[in-house]
Image 1 (cartoon, rainbow, N blue to C red):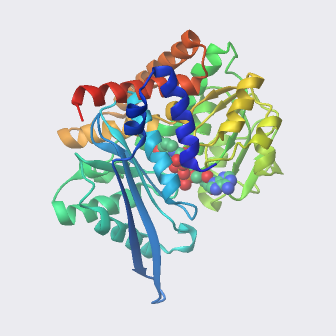
Image 2 (image 1 turned 120 degrees about the vertical axis):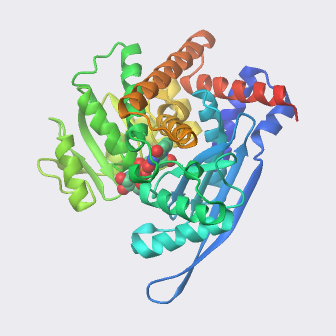
Length: 409
Ligand code: NAD
């Protein structure tokens, strides 16, 4: 099943609950615009390399479209479309005034020099600058992109449109970024994990956690869960995984990965594969890397009591059904990782007002939105006797549907 078919299946389940007509379902499911562009650069050795870039603008009924930009070899149009639709429901779920979009370039950044990465980024913006902008569509970081890439995007966009820091979020602090944006997705994941354990009446202190992915989201999730008293026993990245029954020293691991670029070989841990991590004997499992990793076969072996989807689209529908049957609580991506887009919104607000907030304000506003959204989704799930995923979609789709009807076609 393709990523978009997966996203549509979840959409269909929830829209039946919301009672959307067939016409409205078609309207909400269909993206407003899909852009596919050639991104050609001269490599350092003088050769020409050609990549394909995508930007899908899914829905703008609640405001300018918003979504990350992913640089990864597996990026394709279907996946970008699926992720763009998730952004529409996500921004509505946390009730920030945005629609949904997503973009990406099919490129392996580990094979590019810093100069080549910059040229790829700037060329992509040359190709799409007229369809993005602070009141149209605002990119942000995702897998394979970071604050530096966002700085190049702003700089390139400003060559066409003049000073415009609100055209992209996730920027460095020195260039109109928001204090607290880099940690935001991971902090939100950790807040939602704490809320979930509270509702399951499981004590946070010493609770065992496995995290797949140790990039921006995985590492900050680990940092905050460690601070909240959880015991992170397994962590992995593209190089493989590590395990320690006594708990991994997260501050030291973060320092270690800054030096080595990977978790592999971290002292006082055993090696484990990514598959072993997903099925390890823990209470909380957090996929924080790629989509589609929780397959039907893996789902049967999962021992965790709850799964917090820090990554986008990590669970295939057949696996979701198994989790439902086995009583495994799954906190869906559109709720669990919404902290990133929420603080991106705060960054955009600050850029548009030319007024910076203290980090403490960013954190407290984020915590409030995550906690309130979690409570609302949990209540819908309990009242309607549906999974948290269906409840989250009911909330998101309901808000987008009402905005669409009120605005008119
Ligand atoms: P990142 O590029 O910073 O880190 C990705 C991590 O995944 C790295 O540790 C990498 O080694 C690991 N990885 C890659 N391939 C892997 C594999 N085959 N097996 C195991 N690990 C693998 O990316 P990120 O920003 O942390 O994003 C991670 C996920 O979170 C993505 O699904 C992304 O869409 C989602 N997300 C990110 C944000 C954000 O603010 N960055 C917001 C919402 C959702």
